Image 1 (cartoon, rainbow, N blue to C red):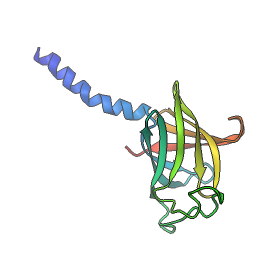
Image 2: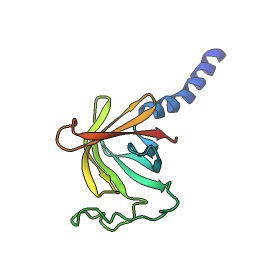
Image 3: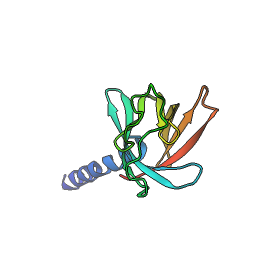
Image 4: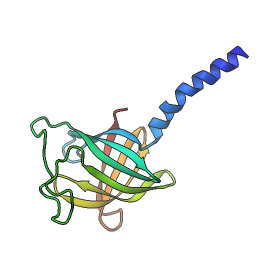
Length: 144
Protein backbone atom coordinates (compact mmCIF):
# COMPACT_ATOMS: atom_id res chain seq x y z
CA UNK A 1 0.00 0.00 0.00
CA UNK A 2 2.80 2.44 0.90
CA UNK A 3 4.67 1.65 -2.33
CA UNK A 4 1.54 2.26 -4.42
CA UNK A 5 1.02 5.62 -2.69
CA UNK A 6 4.64 6.58 -3.43
CA UNK A 7 4.22 5.75 -7.12
CA UNK A 8 1.02 7.82 -7.21
CA UNK A 9 2.73 10.85 -5.63
CA UNK A 10 5.72 10.53 -7.98
CA UNK A 11 3.40 10.41 -11.01
CA UNK A 12 1.79 13.69 -9.91
CA UNK A 13 5.16 15.40 -10.30
CA UNK A 14 5.51 14.08 -13.86
CA UNK A 15 2.16 15.41 -15.09
CA UNK A 16 3.17 19.12 -15.27
CA UNK A 17 6.50 18.18 -16.86
CA UNK A 18 4.94 16.13 -19.61
CA UNK A 19 2.18 18.71 -20.16
CA UNK A 20 4.65 21.56 -20.60
CA UNK A 21 6.62 19.55 -23.16
CA UNK A 22 3.61 18.88 -25.40
CA UNK A 23 1.49 22.00 -24.93
CA UNK A 24 1.85 25.31 -26.76
CA UNK A 25 1.03 27.13 -23.52
CA UNK A 26 3.84 28.71 -21.54
CA UNK A 27 6.85 30.89 -22.23
CA UNK A 28 8.82 30.54 -25.46
CA UNK A 29 12.03 32.14 -26.67
CA UNK A 30 11.52 33.38 -30.22
CA UNK A 31 14.32 32.63 -32.65
CA UNK A 32 14.62 34.65 -35.87
CA UNK A 33 14.46 32.20 -38.79
CA UNK A 34 16.80 34.36 -40.90
CA UNK A 35 19.52 35.29 -38.37
CA UNK A 36 19.18 32.52 -35.77
CA UNK A 37 19.20 35.16 -33.02
CA UNK A 38 16.96 35.03 -29.96
CA UNK A 39 14.61 38.02 -30.14
CA UNK A 40 12.05 37.89 -27.34
CA UNK A 41 10.08 35.83 -24.87
CA UNK A 42 6.45 35.24 -25.80
CA UNK A 43 3.92 33.89 -23.33
CA UNK A 44 1.15 31.84 -24.92
CA UNK A 45 -2.04 31.55 -22.89
CA UNK A 46 -5.62 30.46 -23.28
CA UNK A 47 -8.74 32.67 -23.26
CA UNK A 48 -11.87 30.56 -23.53
CA UNK A 49 -11.14 27.92 -26.15
CA UNK A 50 -8.60 30.01 -28.10
CA UNK A 51 -4.87 30.64 -27.73
CA UNK A 52 -3.21 34.07 -27.61
CA UNK A 53 0.36 35.22 -27.12
CA UNK A 54 2.05 38.39 -25.95
CA UNK A 55 5.64 39.57 -25.81
CA UNK A 56 6.77 39.63 -22.18
CA UNK A 57 10.49 40.30 -22.68
CA UNK A 58 12.65 41.91 -25.37
CA UNK A 59 16.08 40.27 -25.52
CA UNK A 60 17.79 42.96 -27.63
CA UNK A 61 19.03 45.33 -24.91
CA UNK A 62 19.91 47.97 -27.53
CA UNK A 63 16.19 48.34 -28.29
CA UNK A 64 14.57 47.99 -24.85
CA UNK A 65 11.27 49.77 -25.73
CA UNK A 66 10.60 49.50 -29.47
CA UNK A 67 7.18 50.41 -30.84
CA UNK A 68 5.24 48.94 -33.75
CA UNK A 69 5.77 51.85 -36.12
CA UNK A 70 5.28 49.71 -39.24
CA UNK A 71 1.87 48.32 -38.24
CA UNK A 72 -1.02 49.27 -40.53
CA UNK A 73 -2.69 52.57 -39.69
CA UNK A 74 -5.96 50.78 -38.91
CA UNK A 75 -4.27 48.31 -36.51
CA UNK A 76 -4.77 49.48 -32.90
CA UNK A 77 -1.21 48.26 -32.14
CA UNK A 78 0.26 50.97 -34.43
CA UNK A 79 2.66 53.12 -32.38
CA UNK A 80 2.26 50.92 -29.30
CA UNK A 81 5.15 49.43 -27.33
CA UNK A 82 6.02 45.94 -28.50
CA UNK A 83 6.72 44.85 -24.92
CA UNK A 84 3.40 43.57 -23.59
CA UNK A 85 1.84 43.51 -27.07
CA UNK A 86 -0.49 40.68 -28.02
CA UNK A 87 0.96 39.38 -31.26
CA UNK A 88 -0.85 36.00 -31.48
CA UNK A 89 -4.64 35.98 -31.63
CA UNK A 90 -7.53 33.55 -31.92
CA UNK A 91 -5.75 30.23 -32.54
CA UNK A 92 -8.10 27.26 -32.31
CA UNK A 93 -7.24 23.69 -31.37
CA UNK A 94 -7.25 21.29 -34.32
CA UNK A 95 -5.98 17.84 -33.30
CA UNK A 96 -2.26 18.21 -32.50
CA UNK A 97 -1.93 21.79 -33.74
CA UNK A 98 -3.48 25.20 -33.24
CA UNK A 99 -4.53 27.20 -36.31
CA UNK A 100 -7.02 29.64 -37.86
CA UNK A 101 -5.53 32.54 -35.91
CA UNK A 102 -3.14 35.37 -36.71
CA UNK A 103 0.36 36.46 -35.78
CA UNK A 104 1.85 39.94 -36.09
CA UNK A 105 5.48 40.43 -37.04
CA UNK A 106 6.15 43.70 -35.19
CA UNK A 107 9.34 44.33 -37.16
CA UNK A 108 7.52 44.69 -40.47
CA UNK A 109 3.99 45.35 -39.19
CA UNK A 110 2.46 42.53 -41.21
CA UNK A 111 -0.24 40.22 -39.90
CA UNK A 112 -0.14 36.63 -41.11
CA UNK A 113 -2.42 33.65 -40.75
CA UNK A 114 -0.86 31.34 -38.19
CA UNK A 115 -0.64 27.77 -37.06
CA UNK A 116 1.61 26.18 -34.46
CA UNK A 117 2.42 22.84 -32.93
CA UNK A 118 4.96 21.25 -30.59
CA UNK A 119 7.57 19.00 -32.14
CA UNK A 120 10.49 17.50 -30.18
CA UNK A 121 9.82 19.87 -27.24
CA UNK A 122 10.06 22.90 -29.56
CA UNK A 123 7.27 25.13 -30.78
CA UNK A 124 6.94 25.35 -34.55
CA UNK A 125 5.26 28.63 -35.55
CA UNK A 126 4.12 29.00 -39.15
CA UNK A 127 3.03 32.37 -40.50
CA UNK A 128 1.54 32.39 -43.97
CA UNK A 129 -0.58 34.22 -46.52
CA UNK A 130 -3.36 32.30 -48.24
CA UNK A 131 -2.47 28.63 -48.14
CA UNK A 132 0.10 27.43 -45.62
CA UNK A 133 2.57 26.51 -48.38
CA UNK A 134 3.37 30.21 -48.90
CA UNK A 135 4.95 31.48 -45.72
CA UNK A 136 7.73 30.84 -43.29
CA UNK A 137 8.26 28.89 -40.09
CA UNK A 138 10.19 29.61 -36.93
CA UNK A 139 11.24 27.26 -34.15
CA UNK A 140 10.77 28.67 -30.66
CA UNK A 141 12.40 27.19 -27.56
CA UNK A 142 10.69 26.56 -24.24
CA UNK A 143 11.79 28.67 -21.27
CA UNK A 144 9.49 26.91 -18.75
